[in-house]
Image (spheres, rainbow, N blue to C red):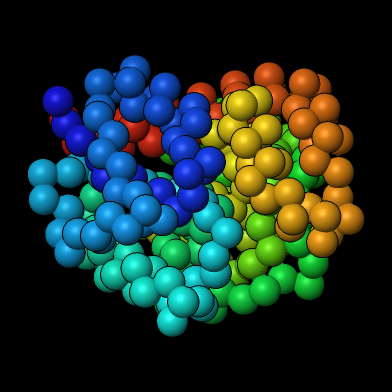
Length: 234
């Protein structure tokens, strides 16, 4: 069975429904738990893909989290090798940084359920061609970045100009979360309760709104993640 490496930065930020897509494609996920001290490999080895998950740290905090620099070097190796890459939230920021984009704090945090609008380029994209032109996505980020040079912008929101991008044919960054489940959202709300309090946001309201928005978001996520697994060489 083929394998993909998954860089995990917080215990609560797992693959979510990405795991279902990998299972359907008969691809095994091998977690590298950076938050728990797992060393970041310098090479992909036998892995045929790289997935980068979210986390509470910033790309610019490499002095505090030295593993981030190691991850960027691994991403650069994966880009050079041409293997499929999928970056989610912090993962998209790490991919953007590896491509030379400046990752910075946004004017305000975008946490909760907000609309995302696809760009014209997304209409012909391998992952987003079958996704509605506008939908409600789940967000949890305070940092933003410009679309990397040479990349194609795929989605935006009212607060964030670059919500998704593609570099080449098989490297994708998704700042918003399409992979979430109800348990995953509830665990994020518990884990990051202090951040919600600081931003004067209600975790209970975020969880409550999941019942309305999650079914459609999961249908979209299934389409996107199944398409990404088709980029993995057989």
